Every structure is written in structure tokens, then in C-alpha cells.
Amino acid sequence: MSASRRMPRLLQLYQDYLVDQNTARFAQQVGRIYTVGTLERLTCWPVVQVRRAAVLALGLLGDYSSNAALGRALNDPDPSVRLAAENGIRSLWCRFGSQGQRQLLQIIIQLNSNGQFKEAIRCASVLIEEVPQFAEAWNQRAIACYSLGLYRQAIADCRQALELNPYHFGAAAGMGQCYVQLGQYHQALECFRRALRLNPNLEGVRANIEHLQRSLGEKP
Image (cartoon, helix red, strand yellow):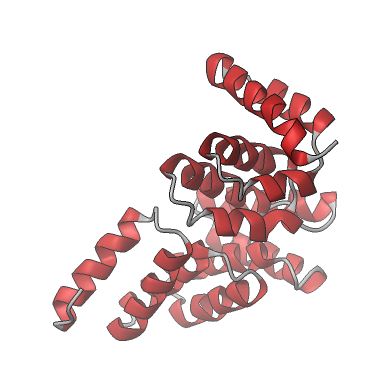
């Protein structure tokens, strides 16, 4: 069955979801009808409600292979699509590697949340050694390094995260914060601009750009 013939069904499922807010049921019902590849194609559909539904579903059903599709959706003209893309892509970044590697990443994220930064660095280094292609592992180690004042190490890890995942607006923004701490404001501004190009919803980053532009005497 073609994407165009399935589209009305996707819309109905999405409208039902908006009423009952049952995320699990929405994901289950969409997953029975659509492949991830079809959902990726529907993220570019001309009808905005279809894009909203497809991006939401892709964030629930996709894995890291859908990173580019959701990354492009971050710049959709519709704010609801952009918001769903941001929420979904953050989840996709953690869906890489084996189940055990994903579980270790969740431990690292929790360690950072708890302020256990040295242990987070240790665990992230283990994960990076095991699977160096895991961009989010580099980003989480960067977060821990930043929190300990290890700004240059954090910059190196953010840069590696972006090399592996060019849609990682969090790593770009994090690198900007590191450069601010080092007093390298032009480099910070460049990083913040990159983050905002990737994700125009980052209002905090937008405010950082405006502040730095004023400080450096640059025009908006």
C-alpha cells in the first residue's frame, strides 16, 4: 500500500492520540501499519498534520538510523513539528549500540544528573573504548568534564560527538559554553550559531548569541 493511501489512517491515529494522549497505543497502532522508512518519508509531507504525526511516531518507533530525518525536521516551518522532532531526536541519540551499551549510557546520564561527574567520566570512557562511534557517550563525557571545569577536554569530546552526529545541537551548544568559560568569545559565538542553525528552538542559545554579539560589538 502506498504512503498516500495510508496517510488518512495516520491522521486518524494522530487525532485519536491528541484526544486520549495514549502514547503507547499510538505507537503500537502506527507500528502495525507503517514502516520506519515510510514514516521518514512522511516527515516531509506537504500537509502539516501528517508531518506532526510522522515525526511523533518516528521519535517513538525509530532508532539512530532515523537521526537525519528528525534532524531535518528540526527546521520544519511548523513549531509543533519542530518540538516533536527535538523530543524525538534526543531519544534517538540514546538508541545506538547493543542493549548493554544503551544501559550503560543510561547509567552515565544518571551519574551526571546526580553530580557524580568523575564516575560519569570513568564509565563514559569505558563505553567510548567499547564503541567509539557512540556520539552520545562522547557528549555525556563532555558534560561531566564541563561540570568539573575541564573545558578543553569537554571541547574535544563535543567536537567528536559532532563529528559522529552532525545534528547534535547539544554538543554544539555545550562547546559554546566551554569557550565562554575560557574567555574565547568569538569561538563561543560560532558554536552557538551552529547549534541554532541545527535547532532554531533553542531560545537559551539565541539569548547567548545576542549577548555575545552585544559584548563583541557585532551586528545581529
